[in-house]
Image (cartoon, rainbow, N blue to C red):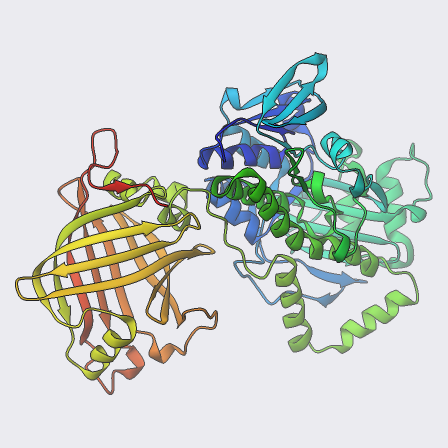
Length: 608
């Protein structure tokens, strides 16, 4: 799209993250927020935010994950209880379903710390917009107007942008229950840090989540028809009375409430956008009016799955990626299709959690008995799979133009690489470089078979001239063509590389190798995670995995680096072959000169 100004209405989590993602994508944007900076930072103080695996990947893409990991607490999914007994517990910690719990203030502070002064304007209230052939004209309070190529509404559940442009989505509705929440030191009511859980009762729920720094975040949920005390009643007394009824909740829940001061408790009536059938989901975009919604402005739901902030982060990265790769109309269409399909499941399950968790008698009794009758070996895997389904099965942060290896390593680790390696792997331009390598090819039947199957070099070459040509597309894939030329031989090796989650996948022939890139001083190592057939997701049996050692290290010449790749016989097949036999080895020095201002000196071609 044309690099015109994108106007962002809303300076919350989604707005700040979108501005940073667009900056990486090379698109200028300006945020307009009607509140002051202090009001934005302090909004929701006393509340915790859960960030599941996809949200963590989004933050990693923006270079914020390590900072927030120091401020937050990582945990596995919380289990569910009833009358002090576990109904179901998760199977353990996994990348996708792990949760980073942070205070909202810490998340907002980290996002604001990356903003430039000209990226956000405070005290500007959105009034209306008018679309035209060149974009959109936005009017703010006081009559000030601004023209941009696109208007993005990330102004929350009570979005003024949505109210003007998307009447078919409906107005926010009361969910029928209220939240009371607080962040307090766990030492006030417990001798040790409690495990995370959510307890279910009749018309009410209570959850407790540990946080960094000796704190816990607790929340109490009451159906509106269960709140019998007037508002002026002391909040602690009202909650204690409600959660002490029928002895449904264990003492730890009551102790957490009792230890909290009334002014530390925040009450929130839960609002949500109306549900629509999957066939009639309203669009988040209007390409004719040059306007799009993201975050709670598009799909606000009750916080029962702790996915509000995470889905907003996914939204804005997807929007930035689409705007970078396509013209605006196509970009909005692709964004809308991708995000509506992703959000529909958590929208429905968020309502289901409160329905099941606050069932009245006798249905709550039937629920508890059913859960107790299921063996742990069955209900735990079912629970884990349902949770994985809720957060999207798998997630790879979309390409916003930072370069494949920057995506896999993350921007923080990528910036630690030597300048020549950064210049080589940065961005999406096609590059060509050269080097001197020794190529050694094994002579066994296994080595010859792998050469045929994967297209590896078939003969050894000493002191070969290596030329490397990399073609990069806007989906973030890289097509590597290596050519080794000696006095009497010439060998080529072609492969394609792409990013999945936070791993690098390299496919040669029908075989795909999945690597973790581990940062090291002066470079990084490839650590093999698994091997599979290309086009599939199921790993091959471990006994067919070759042993691969691949390292990249800085060279005495700052315009190059040492590269070493060694492929050996799979360890389980060592009884058939020499375990130390090399299937393929190529080692040498890559030359990639850069100028003083860190720009390419060698051939550098814009991709098509």
